[in-house]
Amino acid sequence: MTTDALFSIPKSPDVRLVTITFEGAQMIVPEGISVAAALLTGGARDFRSSIVGDTPRAPYCMMGVCFECLVEIDGTPARQSCLIPVRDGMQIKRQHGAPALHDARIGDNHD
Ligand code: FES
Picture 1 (tube, rainbow, N blue to C red):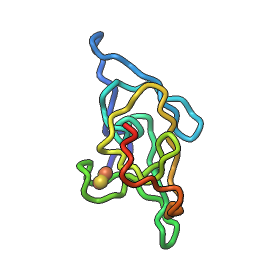
Picture 2 (tube, helix red, strand yellow; picture 1 turned 60 degrees about the horizontal axis):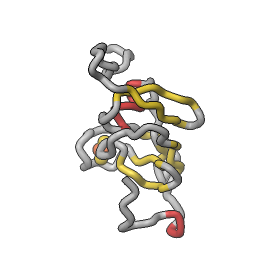
Picture 3 (cartoon, rainbow, N blue to C red; picture 1 turned 120 degrees about the vertical axis):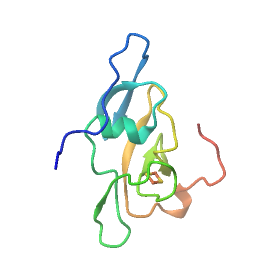
C-alpha cells in the first residue's frame, strides 16, 4: 500500500497557481481545484478531529456526502472543503471538534 499523495499538481504552463495557507504553512496549488484536493496535494492528512473521541479525520467521499472534510476557511467553521474551490489568499485551519454555535454563520455565502 502506497503512502504517496494521490493528487499531484499538473505540469502544464496553462495552469494558474494560487497561494493558500493551511495551519500557517503556505501551499502553492492550482487555481480552481477543491480545497480538499489542494490540501491532499500538499500532504495534509488530518483535516479535523471528531466530536467524540477527538480522532483525526480526512476527506472520504470528495463529493459532499460524508462531511469528513470539514475545515475552517477564512474564519468560517464547518466548511466542506471538497466542495469549495481554492482562491488566492485563503486561510484554512483544522477544525477541532464541533464549532460553537456563535461561530457558525449558517446561510451566509462566503465564497
Ligand atoms: S469529503 Fe465527503 S463531504 Fe467532503
